[in-house]
Image (tube, rainbow, N blue to C red):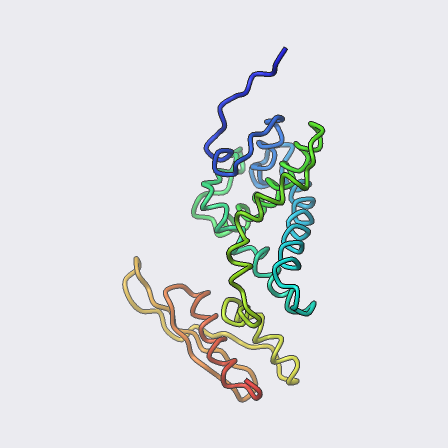
Length: 232
């Protein structure tokens, strides 16, 4: 007797994968904050490794001349919280809600969505494994579809533009300078379209950057300060 094929959920349709064990999908979308058991922490733990392995394979394959340090930095851009959060938003990920669910306005929702993406990858891996399929051959194309274009377009040093705060901290350490300090110096504009101005300071070096969010203003200040450091 053939197993009936159910209609995929909108999330499954966007992922290009229909779960055989729907409980894995529900668990992947259940953050610990919801107060529901089981939550997705164990899946997140496994999904982190699955994601790192697949992105490592892609970065290694697409940039055969790059040294280890550059491969690692590019992988870091692909697997960071911001990248996973954006992926979750593009997929329309909806977290399971419970008695202690996060409000949509909660700052922690960003991290919860990123964690859910890792949990989803682990859930797909386990779902395939449980049905006798090849889990890596299933998960890798999903991750490749998301990141291949960005990986191919990357160049050595792209992380300095996209993750200037981390790059600045690393550069300062090599120069024997203290970690940077970021101070909000001005917030202007209406509430719906604010402009933040931040001053980044490290030793005798300082730079100011402005942007529509505090985080982007810090990154802009870090980018400008990088250009002012010796050896830039």
